[in-house]
Length: 152
Image (tube, rainbow, N blue to C red; front, side, top):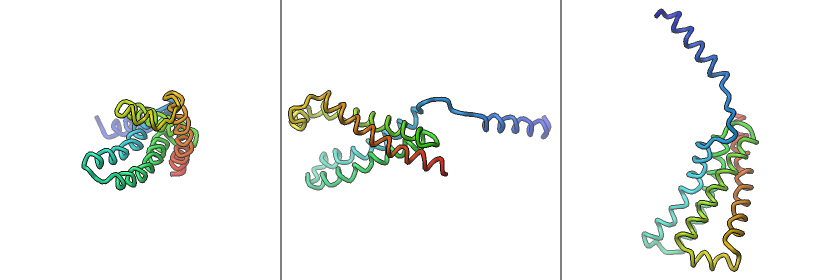
């Protein structure tokens, strides 16, 4: 092979890559990264409780780690692709999945405490409400991530 043949091959690859277009409606990797970004820091209060840190400190840390939820939606929106629509779709899906996962984990790990916290509401009603709110917040924050990616 000569250098001209290699140049032609590279040109073909470059042309093919510039014409690539993702036609997938939802990118699973972006959603998974958003879920990990939202739920990863949420494990810190559990570790602090296990380490016998005072509950008042754990509550402060838990309230601060709620910002990670917004970070997860932003990451999903950014990785989902350019544009506010794609970012909103990915952010909403990531937060809805992380909300549902966290709710199911809470019910599995502490069913009595969760029942008392729901205050008479059934679990499905509370779950649907929480996932709807999480999806709405995820759509708003994810659209920012997608819009910022389009600008970059």
